[in-house]
Amino acid sequence: MLNTIEGINKIVNNFIWGVPAMICIIGVGLILSFRTGFIQIRKFPYAIKATIGRMFKKKTASDGSITPFQAVCTALAATVGTGNIAGVAGAIAIGGPGAVFWMWCSALLGMCTKFSEVTLAVHFRETNQHGDLVGGPMYYIKNGLSKNWRFLAYLFSLFGVLTVFGTGNATQVNTITTAINSALLNYHLIGEESTQTVSLVIGIIIAIAVALVLLGGIKRIGNVCEKLVPFMAVFYVILALGVVFLNIGKVPAVFSSIISGAFNPRAVTGGVIGSFFTSMKKGVSRGIFSNEAGLGTGSIAHACADTRKPVKQGLFGIFEVFTDTIVICTLTALVILCSGTSIEYGAAAGAELTISGFTVTYGSWVSIFTAVALCSFAFSTILGWGLYGARCAEFLFSAKIIKPFMFLYSLVAIVGATMDLGLLWDIADTFNGLMAIPNLIALFLLSGTVAKLAKEYFANPD
Image (tube, rainbow, N blue to C red; front, side, top):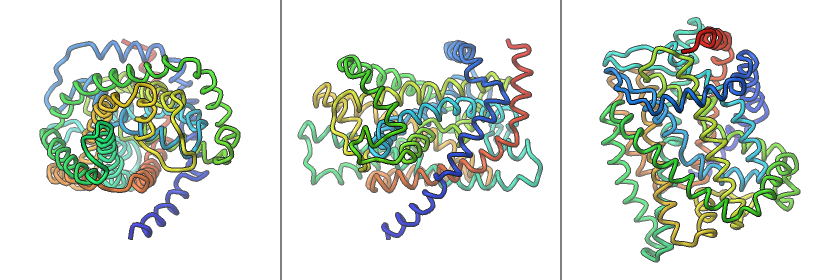
């Protein structure tokens, strides 16, 4: 049965993430960039200043909403996750060091793509029957385009519901169990034969914790993410910077391998990976998995923000992609490539490769700290994607579906704790691609609206 699923998924995945998908993702990013005058570069200093400045402003959100800072933390909770750790490791193993270069390229265009998504989500959002602010691709398709395009909103929501179980939950839990099992094995607290049992117990605990937070509604989700995200990001960055500084002499050679490997993977990987397109495909797909630019999911959290200026909230989209991919994903790549840990090119890899980079540098004792970091990353991602899935389900049905959906979503953690990593990532890649298609079409059609809103805002910024 699993072989059949894997075979079908491989066919669909190869089609979705083939040349047409690369053209669509890069093409829409370029169109949005040109129409906004490359706002992600031209207004980058302003975006960083405006977003960081708002983060430190204490504010209480009105009923049915969260503060702008809580919104960005909820969105970052979903983006700054295992895509930064296991995803980068997988991209390097399958696509070579050059995959990191293509991550950077996708991020450069992705900053404008995500800016557009957030801006449109706030501009076209609604208030649901519970008085909560709701928005995202399904709402800017519904309210920004004609009725002839409304089917895209339902397609996005359908793919969104299916995506969250794999991308947002199962792969995250799998990474948590990998991290905890690695730490326990390093300290000889368990044997290999006990890992399945430990994974099952971890899955049950995570399911309970996720349910307790998600069933508390948007306010509780925002409060938890507001506290968890800054802690986990700073903690991980410090650990990663330590690896880089301790191996500072290797940094120039590593960057050289990233650049040369992007165009000639064979020269860097010893001939194991010889396809330029493989490197590009893995870099772009894992980059999107990490920063979600093009998926539209992050805009769902931002639509809940207590703000009246869509473009001002949209600037957080630029900040998020920069923080997620340019900073954290690059640090993860440097941990793997600078540490000297063994990389089996051409074979599937995940969090264990990143953990290995840390342990080779610091020693086995650091596995407990990497486990804490990975658990924080993954748990926050599960919360963020739980919100996304609930909003998609609500759009398809009604607000009555939210609590049953969140309960079912929580239970998926138990399944994710014991499934095969390679198949999980492949399925997540496929659903991400399916989800991106209706969103990218909508962004293309609404690119003029984004340009108009940006022009009006910057004519009189506050």
